[in-house]
Length: 527
Image 1 (tube, rainbow, N blue to C red):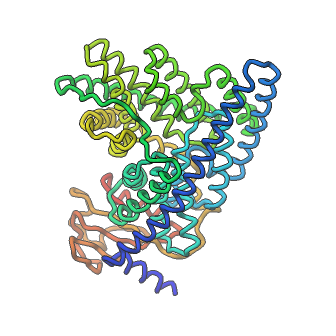
Image 2 (cartoon, one colour):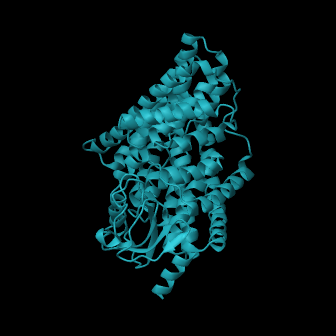
Image 3 (cartoon, rainbow, N blue to C red):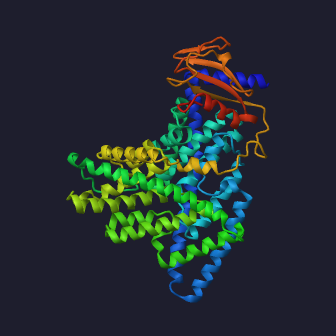
C-alpha cells in the first residue's frame, strides 16, 4: 500500500496534461475556501473597527466611561493572552508560521488555528491594536487549504502545495490582488519559480480574488491622480530609494528588538503583559485614534485631505511607535498592512521635502507616497518583485511602473547591502522548532522535493555516489531538459539538472536543511 502511494505520487509529478488539470482542480478548491475564510475575517474586522469607533464616540471625555472602557480592555487582554497560550501558532502575523509549516518545522492543527485567529484577531482589532488583516489572511488561507487537503486525504506533497497556494490566495483576497498572491508564494515562501505551484497558485489566487470581490466590490485600494515622473529627475528617485532602504533596515531591527525587550520585561507574566498593552491601546485611542487598527483610515486621510509635512511626520512617528508595541505583544494580527502604511507616509514626507527643494511638480506628491510603500515593502520583507506587483494592483495603474520598480529595487539593494534580514524569516527563526517534538508527523509517508543544480555549483560534474545526500533522502529521478533519467550511483550531475528526492516526513526539516546546503546559496526548491 505504501509503495503504491509512492508510485502514484511519482506519476503525478511526471504526468503532463493530467497533472495540470489535477493542479487546477486543487487550485479551485483552495481558492474557494481560502477566499471565504479571508472574506469572513475581513468582515469580522470591519465590524470590530466600526464598533470601536462607536465605543470611542460614546466614551468621549467622560471619566467614568473611560475607566470602564479601560477595565474592559484589560479583560480583553487577558482573553487574548489565554488564546495565545492555548494556541501559540495563532499568535502574531501568521506568515512565519506558514513558512515554518512549509519547511517542516511546524505542523499545527488547522481548525484550531483558524478558530483562534478569527477570535483573537477580531478581539485585538476591536481593542484598537495597530494590527492588520493581511498577514492573518495569509495564515487563514493556508490553514483552510490544509483543512481541504486533510478532508480529501491528499498526499503530503499535494498538501504542502495546497498550503502554499492557500497562503497566496489569502493574500489575494485580503488585498484584492491575485498576482500579488502568486508572487508572494514564489518569492517569499518558496524563494523560487515552481511550475506546479505556479499553476495551482494562479488558479487559487484568481478564485479567491473573485470570491472577495463578490462581497467587497472591485474598486482598488488606492485612487490617485497619476503624474508622469520626469526622466531627467530620476536622480531624486535614487536618493529616495536609498533613504527608504536604510529606513526599512532600521524598522526591521527595531521591531525585532522590541519583541526581545517585551519578552525580557521582568516580574510580569504574559497574562499581565497583554492586558497592559490593551489598556495602553485604549489610552492611545482617546488621544490619537487615527493610528488605531491596521491603518486603512490613515491612508484614506492621507490621499483625501493631503495634510502638511508636520502632520504627516507626527502620524508616521506615532503609528510606528504604537505599532512596535502592538507587534511585540504577539497578539493575533498582521504587520503587513501597517508596514505598507508606514512606507506610504514616509514616502509622502520625503516626497514633500523633495518637491520643495527641487521644484518638482506638486502633483508628484501622491506618487511619492505610493513609491514609498513599494520601497519600504521591498526593504523589509526582502521581496521586491512582490512589492512592485502589489503596488501595481493596489493602484490599478501601470503608467508609473518604471519609477516604482526603480525605487523598490534600489531599496532592496540597499537593505541587502546593509545586511537587513527578511522580516518574516527572522521571525520564523525565533519560533521554536517543533519538528522533533509533539508536532512531528506520525506518518511514514514520503514527500517529493526537488532542487535545481545552479551554474557554478560544486555538484556540477560530480557522480551521485560521491555525494552524501543524508540518510533520509532518496533520489528518485533526475530531470535533464525534456529527459527523465533513472539515477544510479555513476550518473554525473550537470548544472540545471532537477534532482527529485523522496524525503522522510519524520526528518524533513533537518534533511531539507542539509540538501539546501549542498545546493549552495543559489539552491532552488521546486516542489
